[in-house]
Image (tube, rainbow, N blue to C red; front, side, top):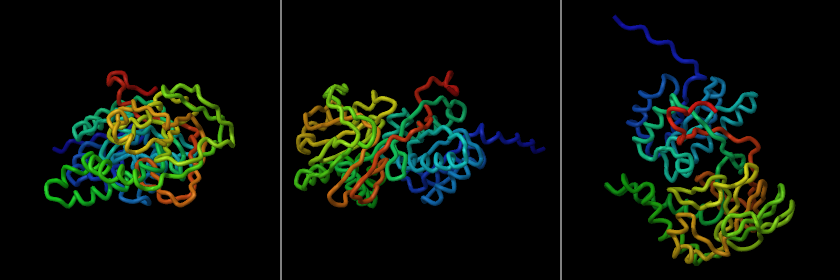
Length: 352
């Protein structure tokens, strides 16, 4: 005799999982595994921006309390933006967010302590269906997106070169299946990005403080430098990158923002890299660890700044290409989002 099914849990007690259907690790096999683990009706597959918006609307209207995104940082950025906007319009509180590492780079996976292998991803999913301790994450509003990091210069150029190398490697037998992530970066950055930065004209940018007084940091990350008032220029000159972030990491554990761990709650980090690219290449290991120091590395704590470029310049937002622009505004989003605290002890990870 068939046993009666248990009544479905209210959606407020269930976890919505949104997978990026375009992410390289989101295969039919993985979707099937997730479908078996996730509750009925709680798994969503998004392959376009329009689908993401529709999913966000459904999640908010259904009252899910936890949303996990499966993909890279860009997937997280777009879903958090869509869900947060939808919740605000509906006058509801946004759910807590978590990230399942199924993309490339995954700065947030490093920052939040999420699993970085398929086994780790499934373990995170199994645990987070029961434990959902959280902490606050401040985000930056850039081009109508809420993101932990963005920038112009070598990060946008490196992202372009990464996609070019990956598109070649993915068609090679055997190699394509094993060299889609870190290996593609390891090839593209030293072979394409750094040499191009060494011979091309530097990025020209003027950065103006649009918010509260900004504070320059010294080499040790202490706010002992100059104070830049509202409307004053923070930087006007040539560099190889101008970057903002609320988390320490770029992709693959690269601590490109070593002072983000200690940034004030009402500020984010601005880093201007004016050092020569070959000098950085010669100190790549220390740059990766976040211990590289140079007088031509300028760091500030800011809350609202504008970037002005003399010609259309490529930008990146949350690890995805942001297009070409002659100006960019970066403002601290007023309300922090609640993100899953993967490091919280399993036995005590409750709602805080």
